[in-house]
Length: 444
Image (tube, rainbow, N blue to C red; front, side, top):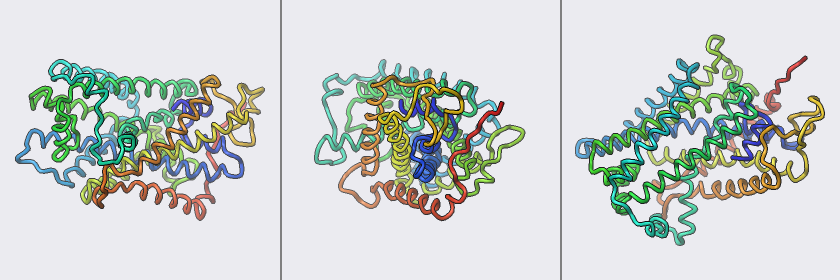
């Protein structure tokens, strides 16, 4: 995320990754590379909204199973309706309450912190502790993989998912004051702050998990073993329900921001004549100054994706892996190009005058006010690219072996299809309209 923060400081724009690719890539290939990056980014953010709906829906279904195990049997269409409810709420917040979205997000930050302590304190106080040796030295390979190392890499994808979307502030850059400084710090603080909270919650859960086999055995009836850990700790259905409801509220709240980022990314790409129906998608409501057509489209896409749950819940869960793989691919392009510009000296510290600071390969690139000093910046850039390659590769793997059609991870098919379809669309239609991101300049 640090190299992305540097790029956000150089060019704070709602376009994000595909704008930076156009800015950094050679002139001969920058238009197509930028287009395909934007094509992937739009898909990532649209699927991210659906993932927020899936998380909220499955949490509600798990609460019903927990409290009414004999009378409630989850159905696919139940999940679809719950996904639609989540998406509808996010739509209302981003449309009718759109002007108050910053204040709503600020309030959610308080809920985020309070919710952390509201969950962690009862666990630490009530749960029977597991010794440190078990937590830090015992490894589990429930996927049946031949080595523990391979099981580790397959399992890291579920930990990568929560960090996707940390660059969401980038797509709100054009609605932010002093974006060249605020957006990079927002990205870094988001990663550090939530990473520390996540580490604290992870360690607490591991020390309070009790019997791991009992928690994992609950996967046959519920989606999330942590619910069983909550119940084992509190010995109370009411207490467990309240703790899960905290997670549920935060899941709903996260969808608000995901929806905002998805609609702004779609609007920015439409402004540059990237997707179909761009002339309609780029329109901004004159009263609210919100891209309501993009907001409506984001809602409709998520509603359509929710229908998949009726036929196959596992197929819809592949959307998570698709989100990871597509985001990693969309981030790999600008990070690789930034590294190339670093080592070739293609970015200078300060412009001599405003006319020298361009955004394309034919002009001199200039570092923004937020930058990691060298050589640390290059080291972080290299490590980030290596991490992307690893997570991209393992995002296509199934969670366990032997692989059955029902348990197959279809994200490789989804990612490959979307990328190839985007390339074909660009060659036959997109290149006639997309000439790169529109650059706004001030005349004096």
